[in-house]
Image (cartoon, rainbow, N blue to C red; front, side):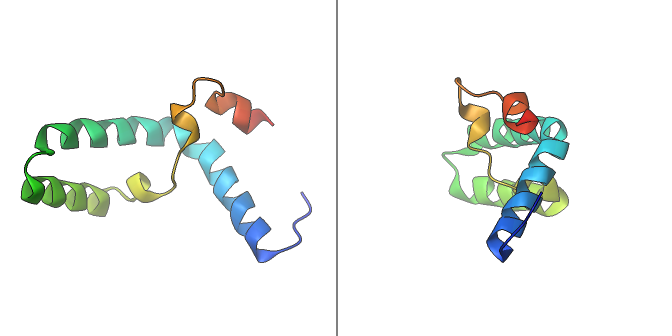
Length: 81
């Protein structure tokens, strides 16, 4: 892949990391949401739990995943192309 700018380099690294790690990270992110949902009404507990989970599991904050919520595009389709 020919990369012509720092932004393209960062995007390539981001996309590569996403495609190599999405299966593991999606499971971890699902657990993250499941833990936080019951605490949504208690700001202190919610914040403490969120910070603790992100600090102990850096994969939770590795990348933003707008694709996982799309019904039209699957993750394998994105990573194969």
